[in-house]
Image 1 (tube, rainbow, N blue to C red):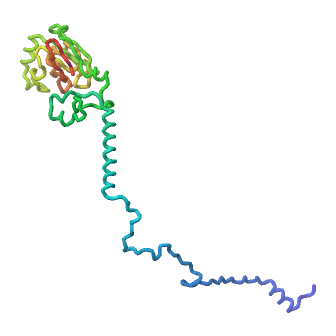
Image 2: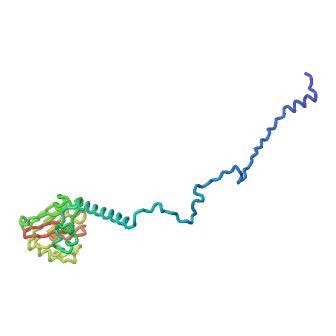
Image 3: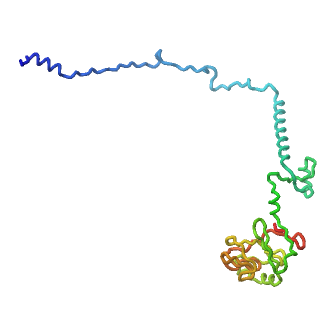
Amino acid sequence: MATLSTASRLCLRSAAKPVVPAVRVLSTSAVRPGSATASAYSSPFKGEQKGNQIPNFGGYVSKNGENKNKLYSYFMVGALGAVSAAGAKSTVQGGCDWASQYPAMHLVWSIDGTDNGFTEFLINMSASADVLAMAKVEVDLSSIPEGKNVVIKWRGKPVFIRHRTQEEIDAANKVNVSSLRDQENDSDRVKKPEWLVMLGVCTHLGCVPIGEAGDYGGWFCPCHGSHYDISGRIRKGPAPLNLEIPEYDFPEEGKLVVG
């Protein structure tokens, strides 16, 4: 193979060299502010009113006089009050006869000409018949012999009624009150010495004590061993308080009303 000439080799070398890419130059042109191409916002309220001027509300002013407007307002308020009073009265029934006890109040409140009094109860707030029946319990005491207990149910709780003998009354009064855990005289727990009325719920954890039992001849709680005397006062055991006395009364001889 014939050798290449010097000129041929130079041509081959120059052809083999990498081609340097051309640098692209991005030319930008800045738009100066205030030029013709810049956009401007034109307010539709420009020049209409200045901020320090009070607007004119003349178009909203009523054409009627001031007295006529007041009359209309007073009429609407009065009509609304009358309708509200009628609606409130329609939801009311019954009442109690306090007018005879408080004549001055009757003159103020009996504006409708009736004698129903002024303290009436709303229908939806009045107690139902079954609730009223449970509120009070009447007991005939003539059926309870002396020295015996009777247990009745009142508001879902047992009530002990004891017809005490004279010996039991004397024994209850001889107790030294200062030695008791819950110090209370027997006379403070009864309205009539021969009748003891109390809730049959142990003050420890709410068990029902057993009558005519215990170390003191009264009541004994078998759950945790609390002993009560013939007046229902705690004498021994974990119970902290005496047996509770409910509200009761003797409306007539031989009748007891609990509640």
